[in-house]
Image 1 (cartoon, rainbow, N blue to C red):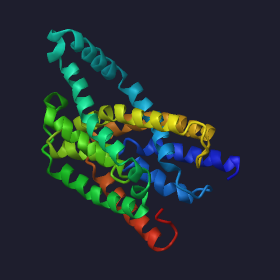
Image 2 (image 1 turned 120 degrees about the vertical axis):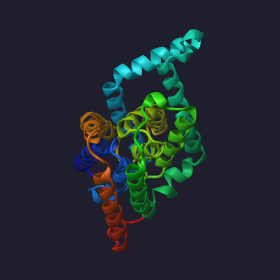
Image 3 (image 1 turned 180 degrees about the horizontal axis):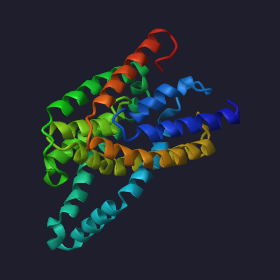
Length: 279
């Protein structure tokens, strides 16, 4: 692939990563589906996906910087001052760490499958549609009364296992955790905010792991275009956070449910027609 095409691919993929990371529609699925349709004609790979997510999670750091600094300060203070251990922010710090354990453990145990067989587009298309229906049911039946101040240790762990489902392209990190939150009775805003905070340790760890692991190696997309895609994802992702949190305060998740079903069906149709290859 020539240099111009690679930079064009990187720009498009970075834009898509930024647009889809925080919406419950699976950014990894979109990159996996879109890659073969671009001039490069191939899967950009799990490493590229993880590295560009550093950009979108940096947008989370910027947007929630006051919350994150407050939580981090309270958590560190509670480590050395027993009286601070009842601080809600210190407790939230522990809840984020506990919620990160499932994806960390399962990500290591199933690393080969995550980077290989689970990227099969038949799985991606089917999972997009299936989890759309689960999200729709959760949004319909969830009581939506709990705020994050009511987050329990057990619920924090359940959120974590829901996040771990996003190791399968098509589930969606935000979609999995938001669905769990709605089923547990949390408001749309509370589920989304915790989803964003919970993703930080796991995404940064995966992104930097893939960055150092692939350093100096030749991948589908070179280092320069990958860095550019990460920057694009950061800028677009920040704007999406602002719009998304405002949207869900007054709207249901139905548009995302319908979009996922249509996209899943389209992927399966393109596979059946031989336009897309499963692997």
